[in-house]
Length: 117
Image (tube, rainbow, N blue to C red; front, side, top):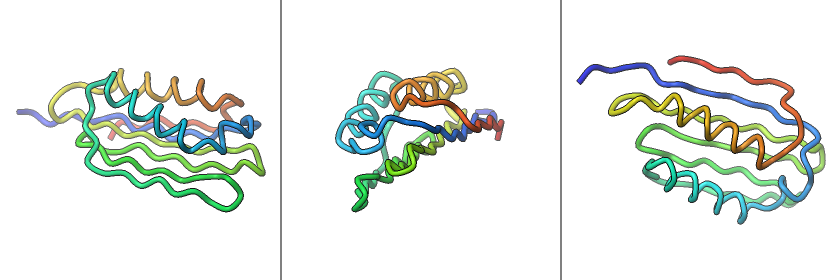
């Protein structure tokens, strides 16, 4: 099997509604739906709530990872998703998940980087 690069998307969002930056349970349900829909596999995950109602989540995938960090007090979210292309081409899946995450959180993209790794 030939190794092919994967896509890594890093994104910062601003003016995100407070409900989206504070609802860790809803985000966890979104992740579970995305994983099932895109036939990915979770290897482990950590969801950590902060006192300001923000949260951090890191989801390990056999394909790599998805992470998010929220700051409700500033209306900011950062997330990244990296899906390697070891067993199948996942670039379209990575792009799709990033768009769903942007729609879920709302706000506007202040910075976005797409890396072929």
